[in-house]
Image (spheres, rainbow, N blue to C red):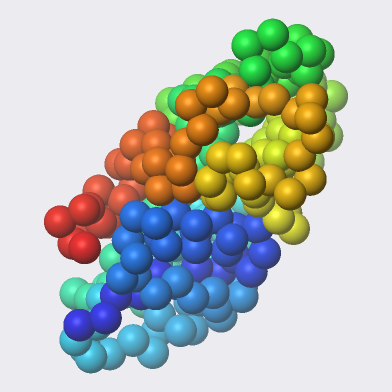
Length: 234
């Protein structure tokens, strides 16, 4: 039996999922279908072939397009015992929910941390809103405070907050790429300068240790467990 992870991501998200699964579930083959519609179509063609398929699609509940795709995907999964849905808001939110995010990105007395205190506080509020199914008023207040457009959805907010928190560090992450310091051994960041010191400067985690912590201390732990992904599967 082969195991696959199918996602719709093609850039930073794909890099992140390959980093996570490559280290924690090395037997799982990570493939992108390049878009929600293509992912849904691929799932519709899955047969009882002896393989196991984990399907990962972003589930930002305030994005109508995403909700339609998720609903259609759920219909395609019905009756297929070899398909498991991994429920995540977005890969960016997975990183925002990581308990040790600030500890990793910033050294204890880093000026960047002080300068970004408003963004870091917004991150805490935003994570609580998403995890506790916060209401529209709470989300609206956050948008006003951060001067975000009313039309911005939570997936876009996740991406912006993550980029603003990690900017100009080895963890800088945007839609195009994942910050290398999230997914490589400390400290193999090729662009590192002598004064680039992060919260991992002393502990110097391996990539394996990073991936394990990223899962264990974020929303990914429950999402993976609910999908039946655990170390016993390796």
